[in-house]
Image (cartoon, each protein chain N blue to C red):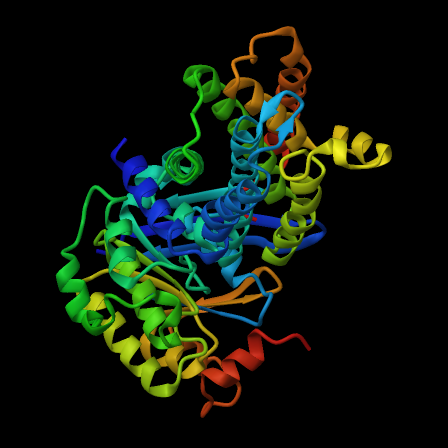
Length: 246
Length: 240
């Protein structure tokens, strides 16, 4: 237990020293939220006001960037440097490294979420959710699902450049074809259909359902089902292919 | 006194179709400095990494400190210290943080202050490891290898890439721990080092142990009696 705590503390310390994950977790979503907010805060989206739609959206982006950059990419960087190989030569258990990495992911996401909530409440004077537990459930479930995808990235990519490339390329569809930024209704029909294959679409929907108290209705079954499917498949792939050392 | 602390028996390890280690048996005695030499790709690192418990051999047995690696690797790792070829640390970790982190992994701990003082790391404690010169990175790795006051110290090419002064200084450090009776196993490409500092030298060629003896004895066996370790290397380790 003590080792997990020490390892997590170190992971967090290192996380706050990395520019790219910090930028994508705490700066890009927050800035986008403020800019969109200033432009569109009076708009409504499919029956939701700006805040009901875009607080969950920005949090979806935070989940994506944390899973892909702070976890997937960072693991590849550390593995390439031989960090995990060196640790294997100590009595430290690999499950402690795994636990520390996952806790770091949750920490990054929850801090990012608090940041967005503070901006909404004190920057825009918006009300927050009346369904905190439903939202927390949606948030945690979506995060775990995306962590499992992050581990696929670090299973497939052997080099830092590969992992960075994958994360950067996927960032575009994740941000723009999931409904997280531009409303899907604004796209031509072909692009709208593409959103079906973007995993973050289901996170956006699930988080919106959680935020607005419609998570446990039949309307969210498909989204939750798809995320559960992704989680199961990614976990199987990661168990088969993920290695701390090469 | 001449007890074996490491016993490798008929170790085989392949990567795909390549046999990196092809039936090596080797015993290391308590308190000796054993040097492993051989060409790049001969299997030095793989052999070392098998002894460190980082890689599992395809067949053969590894006993360290009378314990079998397959059943007691955690206990073994409490009692050995390792240094890899790469510095192998987090990009953004500082020297002091690395020392504290690694110290937390072990039951038995050597006084960190004493290690810092012996290795002269004091001025670098708050610097990022990756910003240090090669020599100081290697000293940091050496410090981490000593942090649990290990009985056996493994060093994979500790002096490669260092300038002559840094090499001499690193050896001065290593010899301090040798004087305490630690067993030290290292690989090197520098024959002068091997000759001067090692009690015995194991020569590996294409995954096989071709010879293992005292440097003096290896030199005596050469046809040319005025030979050096370089000649020994050329005789045994090089493919012709």
